[in-house]
Length: 265
Image (cartoon, rainbow, N blue to C red; front, top):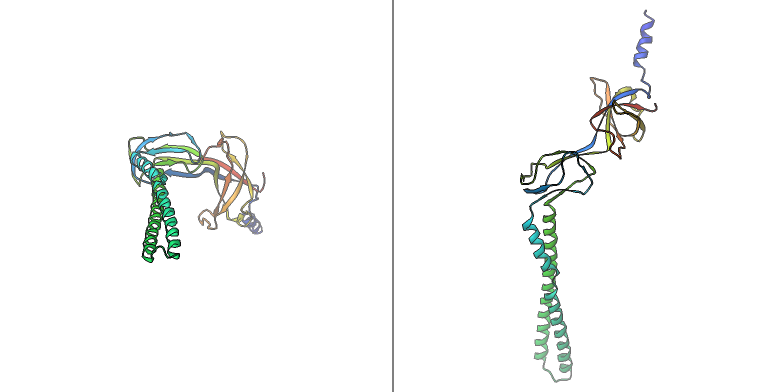
C-alpha cells in the first residue's frame, strides 16, 4: 500500500488533457442600459422587447420643438450672405475711390487732406467687412452648437443587438439617472469558463476552442480565446478563460450553459 500512495498522488497532480470538456456559460458580449444624454420629456420610444436593432438606429426621441426652431432660425442667419456681400461692394467702391484720389493727389489736383479722408473711409469699410465676416462665422458656430443640442434629443443604438427590456414609454420624463431601454449584443457571444490552474500557460490568446451548447441547443461551434485571467481562484484552484463565439445570425441564445473543449475534440 505504501508504494501505491506516490502513484496516486502523481495521478492527482497530473494536468488534465487539453481535450477535456469544461463547463462554460454563453453570455451577451455586452449589455447596454441606453440612456439619454440630456433630461427631458420622452416623445416616443420606437422599439419594444425582443426587437432587433442596428447600430445607429433611432430608438427614442425627446420633445425638441424649441431646439428645432432654434436650428431653423440660426440656419437662416448663417446662410445669409447679404451683409457680407454689401460690405464687400462697399470696400471695392472705396478702393476705387481711393485709387482715383491718390492719382489726383500725385498730380497735385487733390489735397493730402482729401486723400487722408478717403483712406480713413476705406479703412472703416474694411473694418465693417471683417466684422460682418466674423458675425457670419459666429452664426455658423452657433448653428453647429444648436444642431448638437438638437441631436441630443434623439437616442440611437450604439450596437447591433436585441432589445432586452423597454423601461420607459412616450410621455414619461427621463432624467440623467434613467435608462430608456436595455440592449444586448449577441454577436459575438462572450463565453466564460473556469478551467484548472494546471492549464495555465498551456492556453494562449488567439487559440481556438470548441463550444457545445447544453440541450436543447445542438451542434458544436468554434470560439477564440480573447482573455486569460491571471488571478487564480484559490478555493476552486481554477482561473477564467474568456472566448468570443461568432453568432452572426443570432441563432445561439445568451445566458445558456455550454461545454468547452480546448485544444481539440
